Length: 231
Image 1 (tube, rainbow, N blue to C red):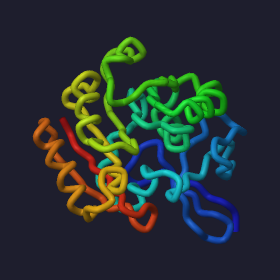
Image 2: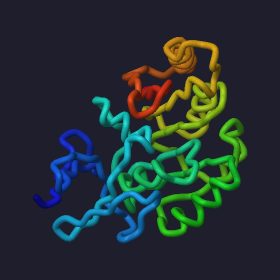
Image 3: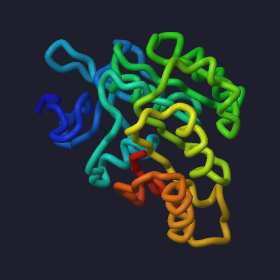
Image 4: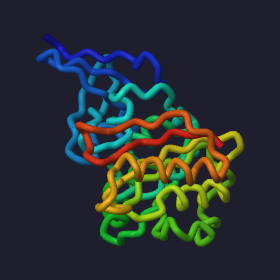
């Protein structure tokens, strides 16, 4: 059996790959052919190269596999990515938005931003690494060209919803969309994750967001949920 690739039935620029053994995987079209980011497998199909997308390494992939109804991130979009780390998910977002889109990658850890810059952004002209603290969005306004279509937030700090909302207030178009990966144990290990999700959602609602979906990410990530909302 050969590898086959078909477009995802709902989401543009995302693909479904059937491997030689019949297993199905998500993938994105590789913006940088023959280069991978986190040792993910590259597959070629009809003269196009795709990168397999690991849901155990990427909360966005996990969210899609957990029956996400609406993915705001689309081709040609500008995305502000808070907590880009070394670029695993951000590189797939770069594939999705393509050459006409852009991903502004905010990351506070110096080692992560070095890896992101040297291994990913150097080869992807639609990604900008920004070494800053997402809690202080006014410090990087000069690095972001105009308003963005989406804000994606995956940070290991308390007050995750507040940090996202503060960034959205400065940078997000209206109407615009956000995706917040709530890490319950980064907020308070003593409280049930479901209670933390409820609190973070309340913060977003109080800041004017309309909540569309809340998706628990088990079994891919324990004590994590993805919140999708529109401003």
